[in-house]
Length: 201
Image 1 (cartoon, helix red, strand yellow):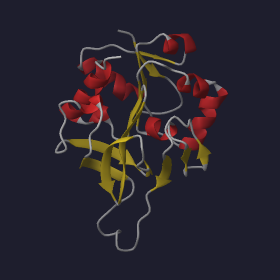
Image 2: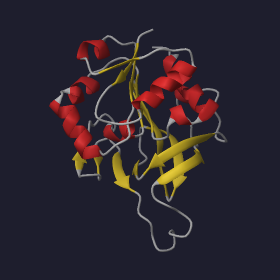
Image 3: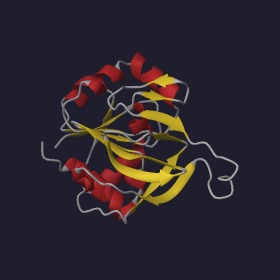
Image 4: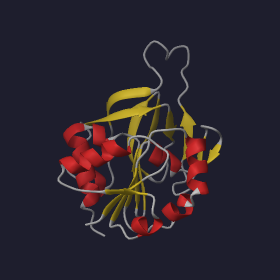
């Protein structure tokens, strides 16, 4: 199986590669359109800022390429946010694969003693609705690091609650995405990656 990790101006790409290696899998990290199109599985990870990253994707024509992919695609963290319709971060029009909007966490005066931004740490998710979560339960925890979140909607397949309920995972057709970092979420995160690789298509 050919697994490709999309290379672009965002961090955390190597962490995903190392997580796949722990599963005995090898991936090609590339921005080459032909390599991406010919992959069996494509992973679109990222840690960074929405507007500069979307500008990079558009300049290199990766935005159109990603939208046109037909094999299973997994967005992670910033990857999920960029696959949504719009982000408040830099007032950015994103890829529009999912109709959900990306908003900034806002602390009220009452919240400030109990919550911090960014949302950083381990949280459980609920409402699991996709094969991505096979053999995963609502009691399992995942690792999050983010200051922006995707709203819940028709494509939400897992929800987390931090200040507000938000999409912990999204799915539409062949596109999957997680706000949490499966590559940093121990055995449970490894199961998410394994389930993605083993999707029946």
